[in-house]
Image 1 (tube, rainbow, N blue to C red):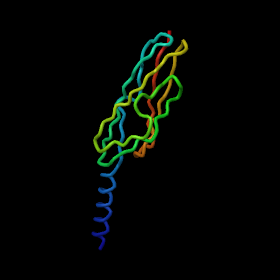
Image 2 (cartoon, rainbow, N blue to C red):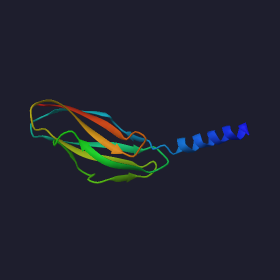
Image 3 (cartoon, rainbow, N blue to C red):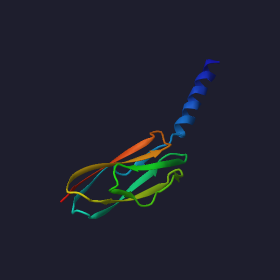
Image 4 (cartoon, rainbow, N blue to C red):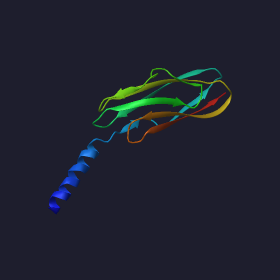
Length: 122
């Protein structure tokens, strides 16, 4: 009887570990470099579903109006092993150094991912 208990626990562990929802981001930190005031810079960020189940990207939240999400206005479902390229534009508005973020909310094991964007506006 004890063998069956351990076997059941082991099989349950395998089942749940195979269904983990793993979302990865190509780069968690992006340094744009130097920009001039009112210059625009396009950035592509690769998002990967590395799991065996679908993952829903629920929301993309930039930290300022200077970051424009070009291609994801609503939710997006990534099928297993899908790759999605998030396209954003940064518009430099004021001189100085900046550190902004983009938060990607999803129904993966880690409910959000943070991408840091750095630059200097001259």
